[in-house]
Picture 1 (cartoon, rainbow, N blue to C red):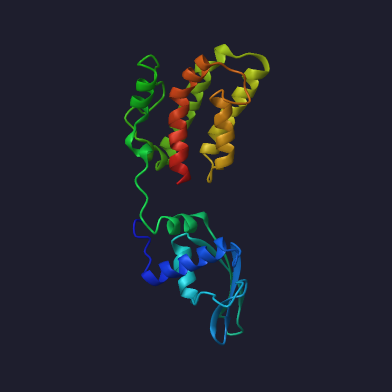
Picture 2 (cartoon, rainbow, N blue to C red):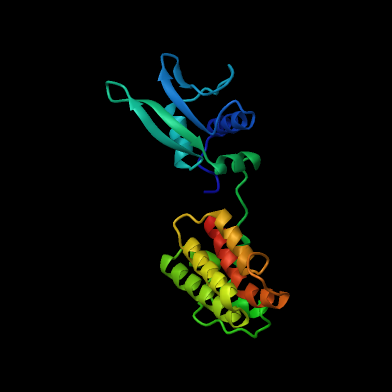
Length: 231
């Protein structure tokens, strides 16, 4: 959504909300209620609270800049109080002055070519859609599942001969956890970061640079998928 469907007035309101939060005048989660003078942010500290209407908040919620939950209604059935929470996206777009994000680098790669290049042509891309771009994979649930399954399986096959005992058990569990996280409805960035450290042999599991080199051709496309899913 390149233009974010916002008018200049909506952009101004969002800037005020984000600025108020950054200046500690407004908590990220705040309550807005109707009054005889219009809609009022009751959590705002100070007398410079933004002037807004319920429709403004609904527009911002539609573009996923904040969450919006109705708390109460009037006796006539109209909305009287709502609870809002600013999302990280709001801070990002204000920080970038509403400039649309550049296309992800991940969309420029396809898995087969990437693995072939990183491995010097020495790795077989078994089970992979060689011509599928990362964005295509992420936007197709069936393809996403099959490619994450193939990549994680091939990753484990590539390194398991060099691990034993607890290291192999720990690494296998980390591979399963990465697969589950990538296929989850909302992947957790902190979990993905921790698992990446383990699977790249930079943390948790003892390994060598040679093992890192073996793992990266499969791990890197998985990270591109993760980056695309987290957008």
